Image (cartoon, rainbow, N blue to C red; front, side, top):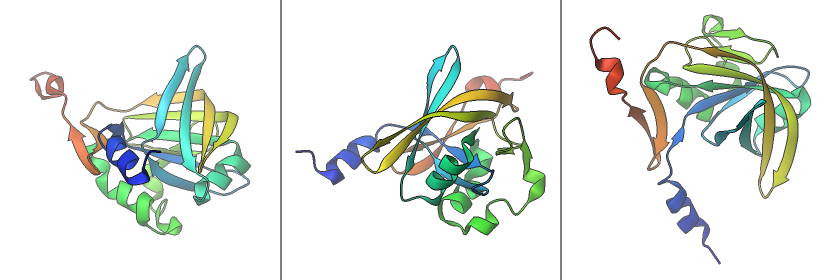
Length: 167
C-alpha cells in the first residue's frame, strides 16, 4: 500500500501550471487556485479540471455547469494567495481585473490564456471530481513568464525567447 505522504512527495516533483478556475451562474460566483488541469483533446477542444469535493467551488461548478481556466503568469502570485486562502468576497473585489467570454464565468484580463468551458462530464473519484469541459471560447493574453507549482512552491518559468531583443 502506498502511504499518503509518500504519494504527495512524489507528486510534488511533478510541476504543474498554476491556474485560477472560476465559475458563475445560478450556483454563484466562485474560484480556486488549481494545478490539476490538463488538455484532453484538441478535436474538439476539451480539458479536464480536478476539484476536491470538499471545496465550495466543486458544488458551484456543478450547479453552474461552466468554468473558466485562467492560466497565470509570474505577476499573479498575490492572486494565487487570495484564491488559495482568502475569503471568497475578496477574490473578485477588483472588477477591473475581470471580464467574461461566452459562459459568463470570470476571465482574468491579464491571464496568459483563458479557456472558457461548458461542463460535458463529471466523474467522482476518491476525494475529487473530474470536470471535463468543452472549450467554448478562448483568449490568448500577452506572452509573459509562466508560473508553475513545483517542489511545493510557486516558481517562475522563464522563456529565454521573451528576453531576446525585439520580442
